[in-house]
Every structure is written in C-alpha cells, then in structure tokens.
Length: 395
Image 1 (cartoon, rainbow, N blue to C red):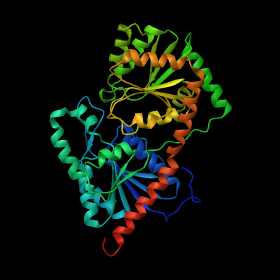
Image 2 (image 1 turned 120 degrees about the horizontal axis):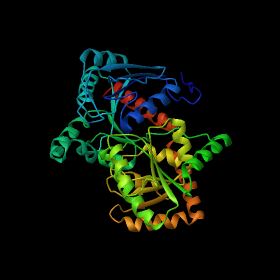
Image 3 (image 1 turned 90 degrees about the vertical axis):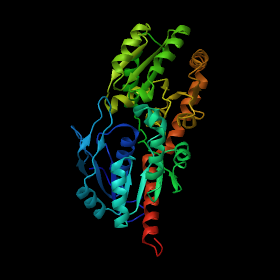
C-alpha cells in the first residue's frame, strides 16, 4: 500500500471511480495517466475504484479495487474495447462521489448516462487524438469519429487535458470547461549510487562510441518509429561516434531490426525490447540525448521522464504533437522532411558541451512542473468544484 499524504490533503476524502477500457497494465498514455493519477490520489487519502476491460495478466496495485469487463480485441492491434455491463456500471456509480473516464468509447457513453441519471458528476480525460486514432482505423472514418467526439465530449461536467495543446484540440469538440492537468510523473530522487550505476550502464552500451542517444516507447505505427532509423542513417554519414538505444516493444520491432541491418546500422542502433522501470531510468540518466520522432502526442510521458533525468530532447517538429511545446528550451526540434539539416544541428550540438549541458539543466527544471503530486491536487480541486456545483440549488 502506498503512503497516505494526509498532511497536504485539502479536501475531505472522496470516493473516486476511474473508468478506462484498458487498465493495469493498459495501453498507451491514457493508461499511464489513469494509473499515475489513481496512485497519487490514493496516497492523499481518497478511496479509489476502477472499471476496466479484462486483462490476461493484470497488474492491479494494493488499495485499488478493479472491476473487470469482457473485452473485444481487434486483430493485430494493441488496443481493446470493453463491453458495458449495466449492473457493474450501476454499482460503481452508486458508490462514487465523482467519475473520471479516460477513454471515449461506448463504455464511456454508458457510464456517463448512468452518472447523469444518478446525479453523480463526471469528468472525461482527453487522450484520444484524431490523427492517432485514424492511424488505427483509416481516414475514411474521420467524419464519424468527429461526430462521436462531439457527442461524447459534450456529456461530462468537465474535460481534463494533459497540456494546453491538448486543451485546444479538446475545445473543438465541446463547450464544457477544459482543465489542463499534466499526466504527471514521479520526479526521480537520484542518489550517487544511482548515478554510478547509470554511468556503468552507459559505458557498457556505448562500447566504442562517445555519445548515447536513447528512445523509449511503443514500436507501433502511430509512433512512427521508422523515423528513428531514418535520422540515425543520415547522422551516421556525418559521424560515427553516436549510438541509439531503443527501449520498448511493439508490432514493428522485428521489422525495424531488419531494416536497421539493411541500412548498415547494426553497430549504431540497438533494440533492448521491454525493460524494467529501474533499468529505464538508468538508461535515461546515462543518455546525452533523447529522441522522439512521434507525429501525434498529447503530452508524451516518455519525453517528460527523459527530461526529469536531465536528458536534452530531440523532437520531430509536427504541428499535431504537443512535444515541441513541451521541449521549449530543453532541446532541439527538427523538421522530419529535412533530415540532413537535422543531422547537422545534432552534430553541432554534440560538439558544443556547454550548450548541451544548458539544455540538460533546462530539461530537468521544466520537468519539475509535472510532479504527479501537483496533478493530484489539481484534480482534487476540479472534483470538489463539480461536486459542489451538482449539489447546489441549480445543479
């Protein structure tokens, strides 16, 4: 059980219900956000229950009661959809003071309708970007997707978005209030022993190289991980002293490994697959740069975790991603259509230790604004506000 942060709690304990189609372990940023917020709120003394789709190997933590729903899993996809079971939904709604839903699916519609009937306030997290969803379904479904978003995002008392970028997108689909609350991360408390261990890992991974570039994330089409290889192929033409370490798994991993071999990058790019949390933090701490090629990100927890470890960031500059705004003066943004120019800028940065160090310091400083404990306090205030509004004379 996690410790309770009673001293800093500003409200009476609430019964908070989280709803998501996939959870513990879950898929993507919404699951990480749900799990992080649930844990931080539990630490502050609130009661937490969750309703989610069934998982073959659940990772439910102590203190969170999770109801499991039957699911449909599309072939060759990492996502799944939970079937709304009315009796389980009603039981959850009857228990809750507030409902927090993080997937805009038929499950969300059923829960919101039940919450309205019971006069229980609810919020809906905005974690499903149009561009990302159409990578799974094709662009022909875009008009239907937008119509669905207008319906589902117009129903809750308020929306929760992880960044101002996401809030701007969410506001296209609703007239409800849109609150910006970071998905949040747990800021590292790095000890000298941690730094020594990370330095040892970095030395082993570098081999004969000088600079360690890392990437952590799902190797699936919507993340465009092939951009990692495209950039490293151009950078390697300029210099041979940098390597890329890729941590993470997904349906494209084996294709990427084969392509790296065809490009002659076997000695430059290494794929570690899934790694444990501690090893991930050591990798980020040892890295000189963190590379993020994804075109669609509403925040990017992976980038935040890298910044918290003092990694300067190299981010693809897409107008469909929140990462360029997130990075700010903590790294470089590059045009994915102009890789020679990007490689030139990266090479210049690697040869400018003072500038690189300044980016690293800026990254660590910026990450502190995304402390998960502050996100929990913000959610408390939002929940309490909508509960008061519902219970008022005109609620």
